[in-house]
Image (cartoon, rainbow, N blue to C red):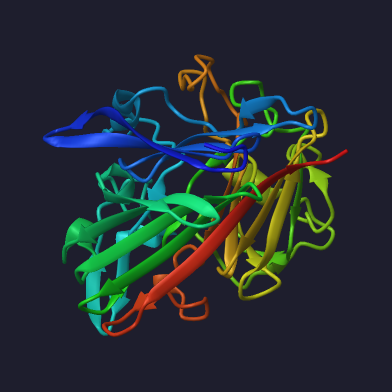
Length: 361
């Protein structure tokens, strides 16, 4: 393998029931190395160099398959480390929505809400996988068929999600789905980032910029209420690079109800556009995100706890990572004024989100 050739290796990673689980290692010498599981489509680790060329794993994850399975069990503090989320990312109020006059009821797993597809969402499934060796990238394409009635959702949905790593240290996640009956669909990836290195402490000193001038206010159950509000003059204004912790302790009802940031930002641009950028000032690592989606959920890791032990053997704790989830808005099936999440037969759900790792001087 030459200095600029990518690598793609498949490794055994245990079993879930009768299904074998594998880990796919995508790499480019001198650049980024990503490890993806076909269990839940999990991004287990992502190693990126700092400004001096020293690599570190900058995403939160568990060391073993058993840890992921245990975290999905009833009663666990589910954190969805690195997982593909479906059928519906984020919250649906009261686990209920009406589509074409038919009421659909979903299992509740977040107080009175259905969260991230319910207790048996896409993050708990073993996906079929195909390795991709392409001219300028390596990748893995995951596929899952979700039958009609799966977690209460109508329609049989066939989903493909493709991870690609290219020579510019870009990890792209492309989503493609179809259905045989009207349904709702909202897919995302729930990777948590700590650009100083996972297990190194909290992310409060790392800076964040969001290309959004409005955000969705939420009620006590973290369901959007009213129209999106302007970020101007509030702790939710990240239009310029701002430390995550700079205003997280401010006296603000929206910060109080979520224990920090756990809100959907309404992106100012549409199409495949710049959405966010984060930076760790000490290591110089820079994360840039582009997406085709209209919304971005920024979650500051408010509910992470010390009993969550990561891939490096260190406990995480509150604020150990932040998530940037490209998505349709929370509770969109109950909000006709929000961008639609309805998918019908003959239509194709498409989304792409790109994460690029680089460094500052």
